[in-house]
Length: 180
Image (cartoon, rainbow, N blue to C red):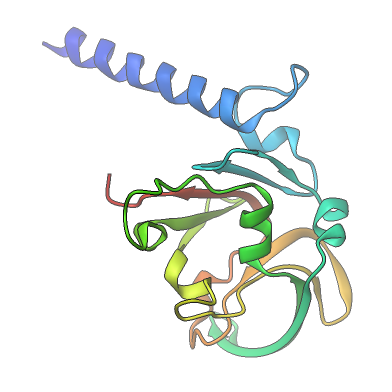
């Protein structure tokens, strides 16, 4: 019985690794696992998108709409106030061409973005939170903090009292359906 479970787990792990390497690594030179290693200084954009790839600092800087927000949030170090700037999460994900079935009304509300930091810290933001047709929060993929360039992007969720969804050193932004 243990052997069967191990084989099933191994098959699932192989399928997951294959899906990640084909969805996240657009070039043959890119390593398969972990997917974020080939995207130095940026975040791998993957999931339900037609154009997966690497959102490097340079490509994030090219996105047309940049925002600057000053936020205050609590953390383990106490209350913090910082000014962040960078592109909107909506623009970053839209540039990757989200794939939503067109036959379902407001289907995008079934989706969320999972942000993963280099330390494997993760937080999820629902599509309806940052879509201007719904809550329209100005959620950033920040490239600067207090005027200083960040080595890696940071997810910034204005309005959150606690800084739990402020994911530092973002290595992955994955669009998907959270309860499947």
